[in-house]
Length: 171
Image 1 (cartoon, rainbow, N blue to C red):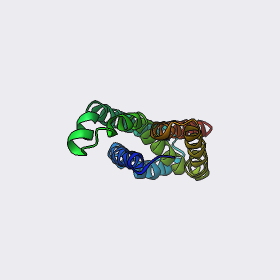
Image 2: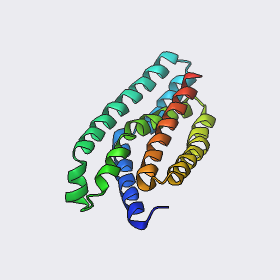
Image 3: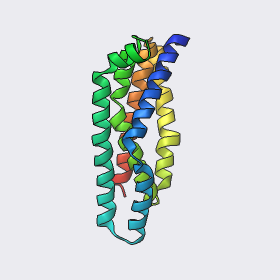
């Protein structure tokens, strides 16, 4: 188990990462559902693919820029802003997952737009929570505590990213 201090660091890092994800999405989730479904209804597969590619590219570039910036300034963010020097390593590890999480959310929105909502739900509501639970349990059983839980979040995000792309490619 982890203590209150370590859990607080994890939640703080998670809050920062969630903020970055929201900034990286630039409203693309709603746009993906709207435009992909619109082009899909018209049978315009070229614009469906183009919209998906644009959404993935835009969110990837934005999330990479924000993640790299925060990765490089994690020490300043941890010490000067939050006065928590121990936050630096947790934050840096979690930042590795931001591009995967952001692109995954765009891909899941695209799946909704092409009426494959079941895959979006499967990834977000079943596969990722089960995988996260397994990863966290393994990390804690192996004695990794905060660092293990942090890596479990990154692995789960990467797993969700991969699953979303697999389901999109089957379309």
